[in-house]
Image (cartoon, rainbow, N blue to C red; front, top):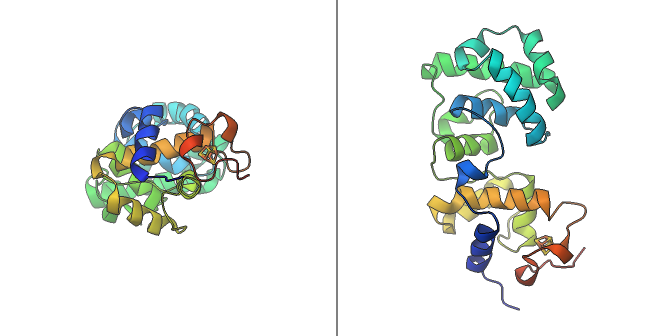
Amino acid sequence: MQYNRKERIERLALLYPGDAASLCELHFDGPFQLAVATILSAQCTDQVVNSVAEVLFRHFPDAKSLAAADPQVVEELVRPTGFFRNKAQNIISFSKEVIARFAGQVPDSIDQLVGLSGVGRKTANVIVTVGFSKPGIAVDTHVIRLSKRLGITDFTDPVKIEMDLMSWLDPEEAAAFGLRLILHGRRVCSAKRPRCQMCTLGDICPSFGAF
Ligand code: SF4
């Protein structure tokens, strides 16, 4: 059977319609809150992050307020997301850095974002794509797994996958495509128990039934 990328891209778009902002399951108001929510989402579900962030942003809605926050108060607020001491420290430091280096405005480029506290390449891509509608793709564990199972890339390293996908995807569609892989990974094609028998991509997936 021949599998082509175009068909898989189109089928995923039919399955999960919308743009990057609407496909992202985190709740936020503006790039700063998106950045904080994304930092909190490491090793945590978006549902838990959303419930934590709702309370956190009620107390600390912007960089100025979070930069001045009592670390122990922030730790307690973000505790349900796991790794809460590190995450509290990161979001407070991130806020201070945004104020000191970018006049309180979250930057919109990967290069400026990577290296800020708690921000790696994946988080930076979420911020620029979802927060600023710029081209990019956030490669997380779902994107790595799904792109391999669907035969979309030969690479396994996250940065190489990102570069490969960005080299042939329509830049305007790249972010949404990545988020569609994430949604399909969460809902159907899980790491341990992919539900191939109920997967609507089964007829175009080279890994159908291989588990
Ligand atoms: S057919 Fe199976 S392996 Fe392929 S995307 Fe669907 S669930 Fe994943």
